[in-house]
Length: 224
Ligand code: SF4
Image 1 (tube, rainbow, N blue to C red):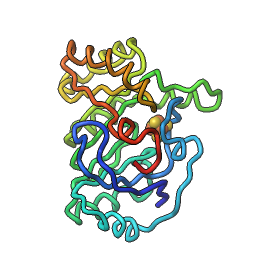
Image 2: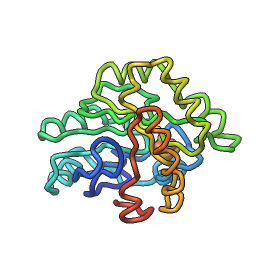
Image 3: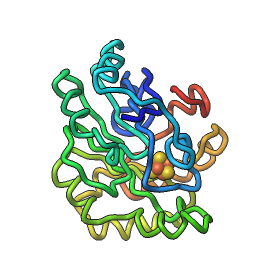
């Protein structure tokens, strides 16, 4: 299985923010967000081939009860089902961070779904149209939300993103109380500026707000 990085840190986003967790980051993605903060898993994928035994050994080397399988898009990783089953057998709480465009019947305790909004579509002749066509898959979202405990985490860059979020929630009204808004940005100043008005939107709409704690603490680095 191609793994871009495997490291121990704290969860920096979403409902489990602050929880010490081992991150298993698969390499490869079916989308190409213009602002992708892990281009080494998408635009220029890299990583080492690790066996499931090697992954499990590395995960268990850390004193964490939580594991986060992220990417890239972990749902397209060829061994994602046996990997998640092995992690469950090891007694770990599993979060999967996915854009919600592909369904696989994985073992998962928290499905962290981050549908990509129009602000993500790259101005790229090869990838732009494909990304735009793929980024919202209502049937896949319905399947993921129906089968798992989930959070719907939106990366917000501009006020008009809210119109798109509202349109999506009109299809899935029951998902409203699972929504988390998070500012797009990989530096503290951008996050602080966007965070201020996004927090006001959260108050108005009753959405949860998430900072990007790992960026606040360590900046935009790999392995944190
Ligand atoms: S879905 Fe995630 S990994 Fe894939 S391009 Fe977008 S931000 Fe990057």
